[in-house]
Image 1 (cartoon, rainbow, N blue to C red):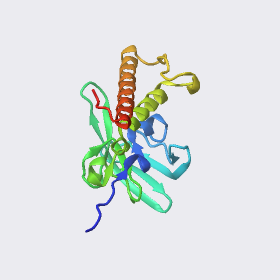
Image 2 (cartoon, rainbow, N blue to C red):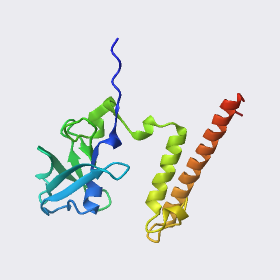
Image 3 (spheres, rainbow, N blue to C red):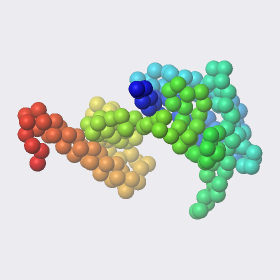
Length: 201
């Protein structure tokens, strides 16, 4: 009987996030700023891939995004849609589904970028491979990375509110951090109880 194929972890592959690319200066909405070199690193800051991005977003009706990695070149259409309140939002057009996506993924072993929906059950997010403790630690690390800024990570488990962040947003991070802490505590109690043969209350 054939063994089922194991799903690939999306975060172990490459990711293209339009808004993040714009914030980092790789592209500019409504403009063509030429070629930009880009690289991806793993969780240990080791480079896993590098490429060159070009995007012409001057015409919302005929915009495109091109990524070259090694000898492989992929071009993806871009579209702009008006926001309800003001301005517009740019999207990739998934080369497989034709749907709109702000993020495209190239999982390990894949040859092109597509939307999450296009990969279906071939892939999963890292959190889907984790147990409760792993999710708790990962969640706390993400919050710390978001808040730490120029502070020394060794000095803070939960960093203070950055000056630029709204109080309500920071409070949501604190609540989520507390939830991860509670989950880790419960997982620890359950683990000890299991080892001692005690029933969880």
